Length: 385
Length: 82
Ligand SMILES: Cc1cc2nc3c(=O)[nH]c(=O)nc-3n(C[C@H](O)[C@H](O)[C@H](O)COP(=O)(O)OP(=O)(O)OC[C@H]3O[C@@H](n4cnc5c(N)ncnc54)[C@H](O)[C@@H]3O)c2cc1C
Image (cartoon, rainbow over all chains, first blue to last red):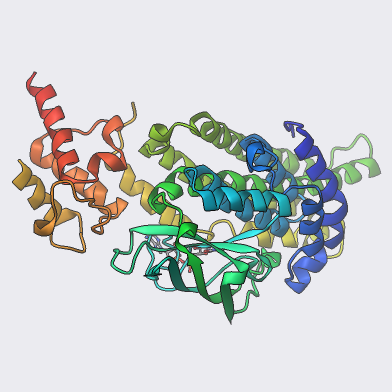
């Protein structure tokens, strides 16, 4: 499908076709971190891609970033998800540090050393509601202490730092949150749950008891409510949907190859599966058009904090996530119907089992019902203008 | 009007503290109001004062404290009267 052929995206396809493809089956089977893939991306400075040039990063646009996620998703969805999660944390810091010295220095370090940053938003208790915390920052002089019981931190053990949400102080209510960047040397992770899942197995999103201490300057001054609305959610929803739709694109590519092979066997006779392929392609276009429109909408208002705080924008970004996670497994299922048993088998070039399993993660990665619940609430007061 | 607003906050904002202890410029979000509760607050204010908050006012900041809410409601009732 037509892509904006930026140099980043072209290179991501090159790395994807070589390194990600070589390791994807083992990563999936062994449920292990895609080390070779992340190292290959590191070597080409992909982890610092979104950091502004003045802080030593690649200064790439949202179109570039989402284009890279879309490319990676076509070769190894777990690698794509690790990459996207990392960039979401980077985006939260770089868009909300408000000139704070610690974060300017840390983002420079991220760009220079290609550091990998993980996320701990979900907590046992408030569960999938990332806008509530029960853990809190405990101040002791210039130091803050934080303990968080987390059911999932993707690639927690591989990260160089974790952006952790919590109540702002021990006296704050659950919804009054802050985000703190804690460096690897400042925390311990005690594994409490093993990540052995249907799909997205390479994200190694084990459960952990997180215990950390940091300097108070490592707490983002911007309230997390604002960080979440203006950056974490829209960057997550645009990068995630880009990589999820990448899964769908690869599934359809396999179905196309299958139908072409059928057609070559009997030139002049259109294979019956061609009709199903045409239908699948139609759904894929719908899916991609929605993703591209969501990305353009975020790009349009990215620097307009007034528009970013609007209900219309929140509803649009939520819908992007919900519809993409509904359509992606649908497209992969349609591709499976085209390939038949060749797609059902795990050892053919048309295999679609991994695609199908990975695609089902989207709907639960922040439960769609929770997101639709938020939209139904906002729609009670939202008036289109 | 401030008393009516305080009564509506008491009923709908689901604060974790008593609204009587809050100054007019105290941050309601820091007092425990969630965005979900803020929508209920908006609905109750629209009903009580017979106004409709236009899209431009539906921002976190417009409902962050009692004074801001009062200013928003006053602006809308003045528009209606004028
Ligand atoms: C691949 C993957 C990687 C992840 N990585 C991370 C990570 O790195 N860091 C991190 O913090 N988290 C991560 N998560 C967690 C993710 O963001 C979600 O928070 C988590 O999956 C939700 O868990 P849950 O289904 O138990 O909880 P819930 O959201 O509580 O949902 C449980 C069920 O209850 C329903 N439900 C609950 N509340 C409502 C409501 N208000 N309205 C309607 N329905 C409701 C839901 O529909 C669902 O069926 C990851 C998840 C996945 C799948």
